[in-house]
Image (tube, rainbow over the protein chains, first blue to last red):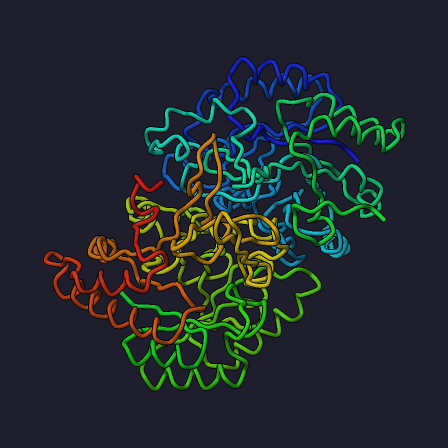
Length: 297
Length: 331
């Protein structure tokens, strides 16, 4: 199995992003997904900047995929999406059927985690449109994955989200702006102040959700490191890690070392535990509430 | 511009038809539809009676099979489509592309509507469903501003249905797994959000607490009206402040923009609430029928009557209303 690094879900400052990917160029991930997937108002990097980073990563031997917005509402967003799909030199990750419609019969593409592939027939429909890889929606469990794998279309690669805060929902409303009593149209890009999102807790102080602009994430880190053996047995091709500020390179190294067989699972789990400020969860994998921790039998 | 009303039971369907709905939407009594609540919905024979009652009253019937089947559920969802095809319903409301593909293969003549759960928020996504599955109507998620709805209408060659009244989903429908994160059941998978089986109420010295699978959703002071603990409508702490961090308990109500929706070419106004009582459905249908008729007969002179707003607010979630995402400031 190969490792991939998903798109950065947060708004990080420009220099940090360039520096981050310079380090990623030397890290043991095979595939890097680039671009803004959450909010079109985040423009600290423009398309030429992303292509600049893409070029450097490709030169370092990475497979680069340009990822795209999950929620597309405005005409300007449709146009920006079209310009990404017309580049041609990199594969595109579709996170909305708008992208599927543009790439249909034109270029091979990746089905991102925000497109609902819950069964084999849907995957077959998308394979016909030119999809060559799918990322399993985070809500799905291992039995569903096993069943879809058994009928996987020829040549289709399977990627599973294995580490990071879970993407739980999208809205038209910007929750970061709302928390600052700002209108979305006058948000002053306040999400830039929260490089790992803004924590929402219950009234008894339990850390619960993570506000990331128009996206809501879990605060707990979804972590399937203990499931790597099963993932391999199910014929999964790629394991996806989600960028965060804390310990990203250590996270990549831990997964890589486990895959190489050089690091025992408890050691990796200890390293990862330091990068999970609100703890971890894996419930979805077992068909349980996503926030649950199910201990491996 | 049609009025499409919810029917979670035969009495609710009668209420909608008798009070002037142009169409009603229903679902089977299982997880194949996004309002899979105990005691609601229709078995095959009840659905047959419902279709015949509605057709006699000149109302159309749309049947929702709008959850996303996993492989182990696939056969059951196909069976639901097969049953629906025998029912003389006027359209199926679907969200799963695999299931739409099945319909196209087996029942080419069946009219398909894309469910709000299909998350189509722009003309490119809509065109995908139209090209591949011959979808004839698309229900827009409750995330677009009025201007964005109008822009979509200019660019598509398909009927557009929008939500006009009812509980407000804050998130993009079809793209929210908050409920399964907490309870294991989500609209996509199980046809429910914040299911009643996971709700617990506790009386504590601090007040009345509502919990969803143990997670504290809200605390109500003595005398404060308590709402159903839909998890996006609780009060939480962010940055040191406790408030409705995601959304207040409130209802969507589009009366203020009805003429604009009409002039832009919206084909249908949908009312949320298959989980609601027949009395609720009757009242909403009556008010919206009057309002839509008034709007169509003279859109330039239309303004919402105080009595309509009052009647609707009385039965609305949180007893208040909002334009939701249709209005930019809400976003």
